[in-house]
Length: 503
Image (cartoon, rainbow, N blue to C red; front, side, top):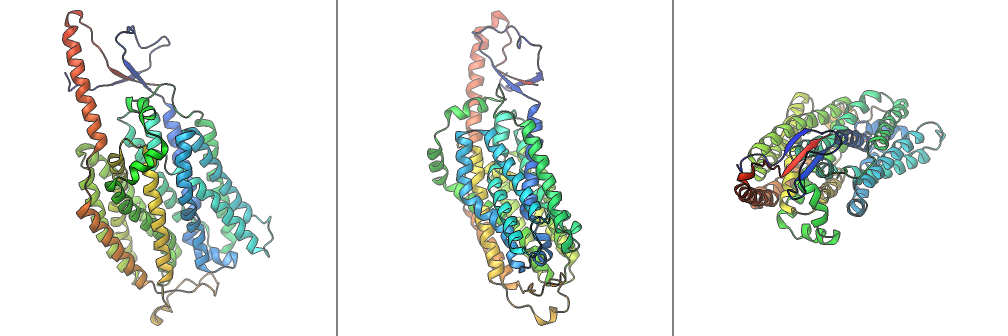
């Protein structure tokens, strides 16, 4: 009897209730509303809009530098601002969701993303004269700053959405779809930017395109996100979690004194930081060896597209086995191996096929292990708010991304003379954009990556606290139902302890 499912899904009954169930029976009735899918789609587009605004300069950095009459390294600020501003806003956004709720956080993120897209478009629309390039550059960076603020409000909500709106057998699907929308936005930018921008005259068109995406996401948010949570919760944990959790500061203390979680913060953050930095500086690295902007963007797109496939595979495997720790270690260990090979080919010209292959393999295991890593972070910190455990993993990623970008720029050297005839960094006509030799930079990054991953594989261990708690509650519930069944055998009553009704 206790092996049966503890909840049932069905079509919502007609108005008047779920049947003639007496008050003494006190069944828990949970409802899953169709609106949850509209909110999910909204968050997907919102993350795509925000991520594409963040990274759309990187694939065409040299052309953008020519447009603003700046050096190529100054275009890194469009990415670095996101990383820097996310640091304080991680604490602000998690405090907002704790005090004001899901709806307020989503609308703040949507509004700031929309404002970022509009300001970026206005800066290059012709309203500011072309002889005032400093003003155009400044307004663009201000818009980018608003986008960085928005990122902290839209990037950390996948697990919160799943908890509040989805039944327990759909939470993994929801979290995966929304979590992968951010890298999907990076792919969109990596493909669209070099396709649209063939010369500096195309920069305004690029900004109009991404402004349109941001406006569409804002409209979706206004229409679909009209309340923080459904009238009736979709699961028992959604019903009880917000009432039983400790206060904000107590939860902060809990996660920062959880050593397995801190180890994950370092390891997952290193992966996020590496991929973020790679999306930012790949074009600058590869142009020194003759690789086009289009190929640089394509290599990043391949990385993320293979990552989507890897995420689906690791998610299915994890759902079946619940082997969070082994899967995470295997994914990140294998990803490190392929990352090293990929970076070695970054240092050799005319290796497009090899770079594409190993970028794909790195993405399959590196990005593919990311959703499982987030689930593992939740398991290690349960019952802390899911958005909080996710947020500080991303914060670590942003900080490490900043360090990696600084290493790439700071340790670069003058280019090797025999490569001077093939570089395409100066193809945009800006003499201030100089090709560089990034051999030492990449070797240092490879060494750091090996250290972090080896440390994690050897020393990370944690119990699955959430699974343990759910198993304990299920055993208790089974025992109670068995006892109640034997007491009511003569009444021939079939009781349903938890019902999920899909609207």
